[in-house]
Image 1 (tube, rainbow, N blue to C red):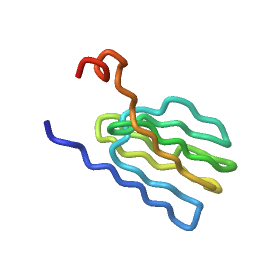
Image 2 (image 1 turned 60 degrees about the vertical axis):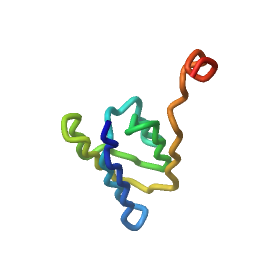
Image 3 (image 1 turned 90 degrees about the horizontal axis):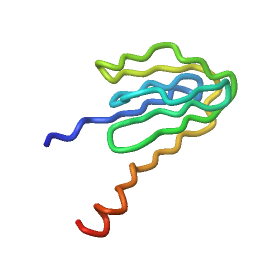
Image 4 (image 1 turned 135 degrees about the vertical axis):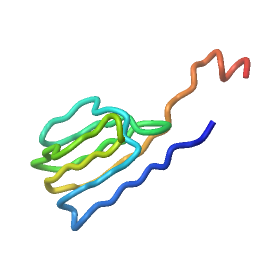
Length: 84
């Protein structure tokens, strides 16, 4: 199985552009939660606004004062971890 490429570009803490985004799970002016290839991304800041999102292409863009981005991996089901 081919792994999808994922990128994140933050420009002067005012704009974030990402690829490999599968869905927007939640958003407020202070936090945007995204499902990305293999996990989740949480964008934190103030005055955040989603400018564009393409579910078919995986492109995402938001503006605002970006204070941080955190990536986490998807957890495996416990049965898969126990029984391989």
